[in-house]
Length: 387
Image (cartoon, rainbow, N blue to C red; front, side, top):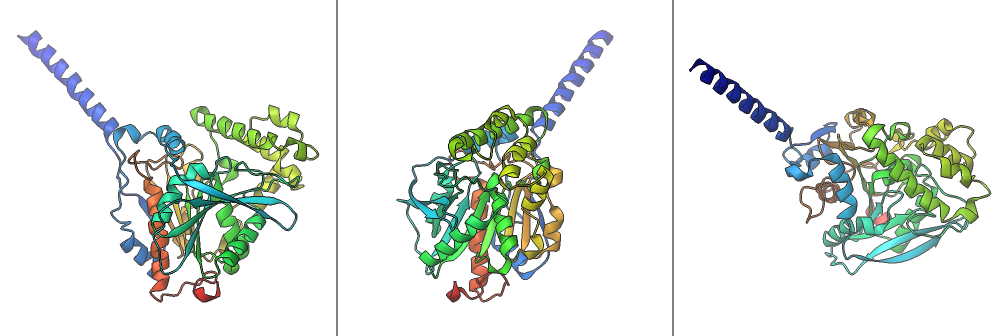
């Protein structure tokens, strides 16, 4: 009897321990994202209208893995949205491409609102087509900006611009305002495309002519972008995509770039040293990174900005997220989730991602705030008749 009791006790302990262990694996941390912001009238309006204090991100169990989220963001992003490509010639005769979303049901607003989408450097308009479709249904006119040489565009000059160089984008914004003189222009950046957004807003400050912006899965620090181990796979995949895009233009760039060395390069730092440092004539890659840091002119940014980040993003370390920015600047707001991967934030594979919905709700709320007569000192959007 004693032996039986002992065996039952041991078996029961094992079962209970296994149950507790499995429950701990399935336990989801708080599904309400952590917010970082400074108290202001705009912040109060955003918290209320966007329901940020109780807006949960709670993906099902099979979608809680960071790598699953990251991979699905590329697989599930394609929809039937079609695009009309428009090429623009820059002052130095370089060419950039704009992909305007077509054949989508646009909800008519009293005022035209243009949404400029900045995709990741190695992706195309197809990868953000579901965002374009949702934006159009909410009354925006979506357009995807492709930097010279990327997004299956041509390279008319021997120059590839980094995401820290906003001068092409400056000309694009001016062109959009000339095409839609009374439009409200907003921006959403995704992944590596985010770097261009604060670079532009910081360099041109109050003359940026942008009403609001959103960065989804931004990488704030180039030097700490990738990690070792399993996460290093993303380093390899991203470098392969960059090399592929670069080799398409090898005839134009061979005078400045040693493509034999690029083939042997398997480090993000080494790639920037061989490519961008040479094209921009920097002596070291650290000098290049300092000059192209997206937050180098953060004090000059005068536009409401939302940052949406996941703490399990495999593209960068969470310690590189500049939380203090949003506690110091009243027009910055950061939303951090525990799960979501890189540009994932998928809680339903059949629907637009949680982050993209939040991004558009945020832009709607900022524009609503200014339409109610509240004054925000950014760009020319306080006096929209002059845009």
